[in-house]
Each structure stands twice: as C-alpha cells, then as structure tokens.
Image 1 (cartoon, rainbow, N blue to C red):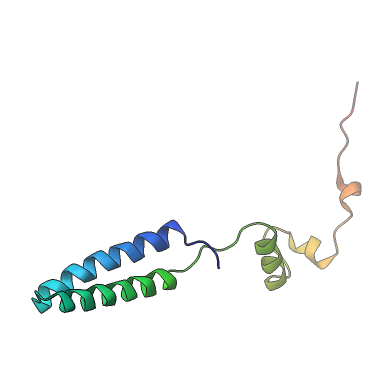
Image 2 (image 1 turned 60 degrees about the vertical axis):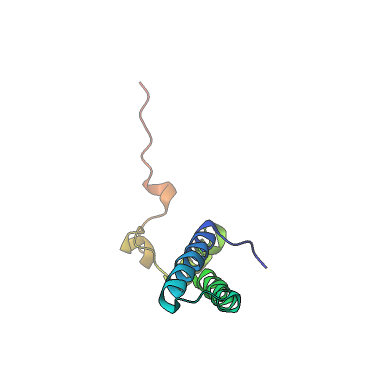
Amino acid sequence: MPRPTAAQLAYGSATVIVSTIAMLLLSQTSTGLGVAVIAAAALALGLLVALTVPLPRRRGRHAATRTRTTSPVPDTVPQDVAAGTSTPAAASVEHPVHH
C-alpha cells in the first residue's frame, strides 16, 4: 500500500478534529460511552476522507506514453510534417557560410 500524501494526512486529520468537535457540541453527551462512539465515528469519517482525496498524477515516461496514445498528432507538430509532405529535416537545415 502506498504511503499517504501530505494532502491526505491534512484532510483526514482536519476532518477528525472538526467532526469530533461538531458531533460533541451537537449531541451534548457527557458519558464516556458517548464520547467513545463519537470519537470512533470521527476517526472512520477521517479515514474515509483521507482515502478519497485524489492522488497526484504520475509524471514522466508513463504520462508521456498516455499522452502519445490519446493524441496521434501533437499540437506542436506542423500539419505538413504530420501529414508527411514536408522535406526531411536534414535537407531543410541551412548551413552557415564561412568567409
């Protein structure tokens, strides 16, 4: 199982704290059992929130492969090159003249 990200830890922790305070204030319980039930519910809710935070997308080789397969002709390639009608790159390179 991968390690949780900083965002997952932050959202999960904030959810536990805020939901515990809110449920304790709304229920006005003072018994040990009531506090334990609320704490368990807050922990479960925090875990649920932490697991549903979207993970960051992978960068690098895997992202480039997905992009290449979804878009056959990238936007940066001129249309004549994509269609195969342009001259080869070596023929179109201008050579400097040395005097």
